[in-house]
Image (cartoon, rainbow, N blue to C red):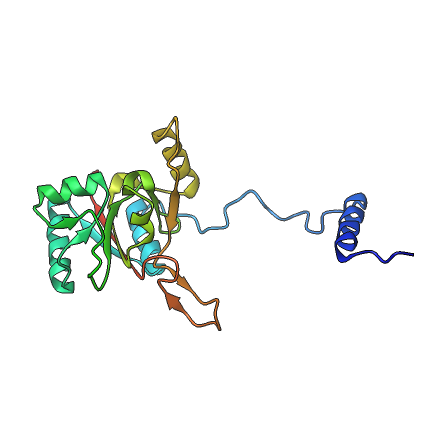
Amino acid sequence: MKESTPREQILTKIRNALIEKTSLPYPDVDISSSVLKPIDEKEGLEVAFAKALIQAGGQFVYCENEHQFLGYLQTLMQERGWDTIWTQSNKVKQVLKAGELSFAEVPGKDSKQLVGLTDCERLIAQNGSIVLSDQKSGSRMAIAFPEVQLVMGYASQVVSTLKTALQDIRQFYPDTLPSQLVFITGPSRTADIEKTLVMGAHGPKELILFLIDDI
């Protein structure tokens, strides 16, 4: 009798498993409710988002208006020694031009640290995630390249859950969705290799969100 190959053995097990009917081992498990902690509606979505973002390792800066945002950004650039900010976002360019702040549309090759600034699609209060798209950021590399990712967001963009964020984005782009949607929850990190934490493995080492109050 010919001995079956490992592939045939696996397929046989799968076929037998499909034929044999088994009862659900945990019939009382609730699979419809959210696994995330509900938001405290009394404190507001903006506060809930700020807490979740900080807990995830991100930094939060509240701005009363765009003018205050420009002041905070200019101070941060002076403190960190950043000569310019890299951005490909049309919205960000418009705001920076109004504030007469220097920015570059092409990442500098000689800069020690690439600092990028973009706007966002939505901010999710339930887990502190920031939703970026190539449509608003200007390109895919504007999301992937920066070592320090600065994000300009507005209070009106804060929503409660991921589901709400996706619904809003679909309504905003009724015909064609952006080719890339990225969900950032704190700085990029990994501990896959020997359980050693490495920051900036697949994205920014540092994440700073400026929330501008427009409500």
